[in-house]
Amino acid sequence: MPQISLYIDEKTLKKVENIAKRQHTSISKWVAEQIRSKIEPAYPMNFDTLFGSISDETFIEPDELSSNSDLTREEI
Image (cartoon, rainbow, N blue to C red; front, side, top):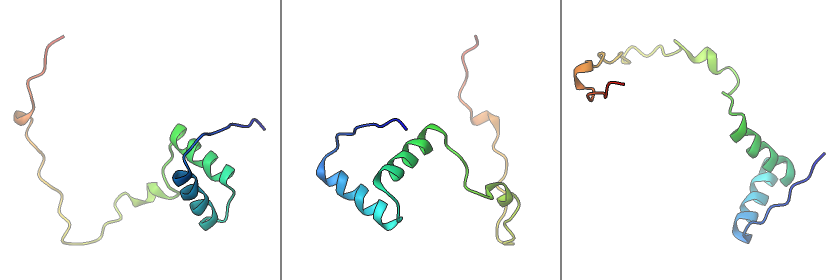
């Protein structure tokens, strides 16, 4: 597997070490996951099941905004 070298300050390294330790993973694995999440963002598991899941009767759908408040667009 290819390797990469990073140059970071001590304060940032300490934060990375602490986070990786709390997540019971290696620094390398944690950094790789952070890079991967920026390159290939993904929704959390079961995100699609949230649609329509609000059952609070105090939740109301806001009125649709009028397009009159839009800015005038330049014609192309």
